[in-house]
Image (cartoon, rainbow, N blue to C red; front, side, top):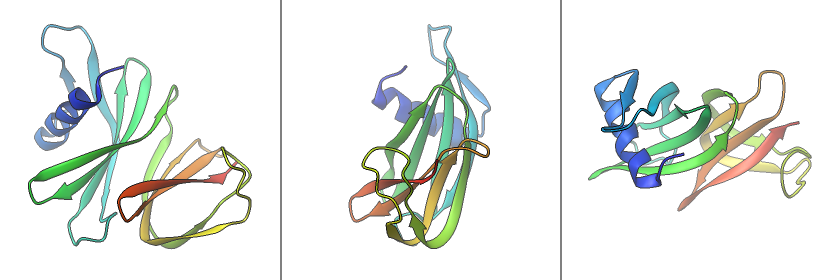
Length: 141
């Protein structure tokens, strides 16, 4: 696994250059962007990017929120298997019994967009922006 500041620099290199893979200087580790989608997650009128990064069989879901001075990165999730990523326009999500907290049936207002990170026909989590941070809600078991 790599350090968060390295991940941010790496993400920006991969995303901005459109490269499929980038090797660390002086290292044999190869990191690749496995998937990405774009949507305005924080409702500031700027398009944000969500990237699924693979680094030595570890997948990190990272949101890059567009700011005036560049991007602000948020690591939303880490997994040992590749999951599906999608950006969704929708006003709400409903929580399930999956995940920590066991908030079954609670409806969460997303503000209009959210990210889903899911196993095909399996567990899924939604991430949406609330004021200053992302909220995670398990939406499928």
